[in-house]
Image (cartoon, rainbow, N blue to C red; front, side, top):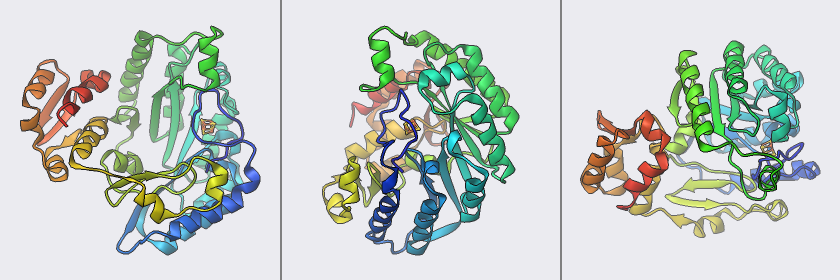
Length: 368
Ligand code: SF4
């Protein structure tokens, strides 16, 4: 849903603050796009309403899309259905409706419980609104709640981050996504840093905050399963895990990406163009077929993000390459540097390796 109440200072996603009047038409286009797929034999395991801010539009729009998915596909009984929310847009009425539609996971974009940090990020909500949104979600019966947190924000202290983790734990939040702020070109925050109005956080401080967070999260029972994702046992996001495991997915909507039929393709980022309708067949024809070498690169980039790493049997099935043979020398070197490990037919990055993950990936990807 490419609509947001206000543009955050760090955001370079496709989202519009002045086009809410098109939301119903948008919903029609999404459903039309969905109906063009050949769904024969597919069962949907997860649905993720992302954005933008799906909670900013009328809940009935979400319901229409969800029932269209249910009509078109067989929706697995235990499907994970997530909705991304901005704290300032959640009401008890909406939460109640989401539950009745079958949404069983909420991902709340809190980012911080520190009003100064929220101001620098240009978030539309304050810390108390964030707290109330989590409380209301719990009261409405949502057990599976993710909270997004950010670190390495200018002027953010380590204490501000650890307080945020503390708060999440005391609310009984099941899942935390923790992202380091990236200063993207074209954003207000990047301009503020470039002109000297704000000071960017240096790499050492960034890593220091990350390690403090890792330690705290572990102590509080949140198990890391991906570089930026932590969950109480059994609450790992099945949807995101499917991306990292390179399972097929269909992305619907403006700027959505898909991986289907061994092709990667995407939709227009222009809302008006999208509203004019999507031709799925043409989009797929224009997509990129993932050849064996690209598949190998993708597995390295995606699976090494996960703590469990790469399944070596699946690697050879998907790519035709034997990773251990193809990269033998480099694997031995990375192992001796303490950056990777091998066990139970899997190759994974160690804690130290995840800190320099780009280096590890580039070292291995040079063979493909
Ligand atoms: S709520 Fe999310 S999508 Fe919307 S402007 Fe902020 S960061 Fe971007």
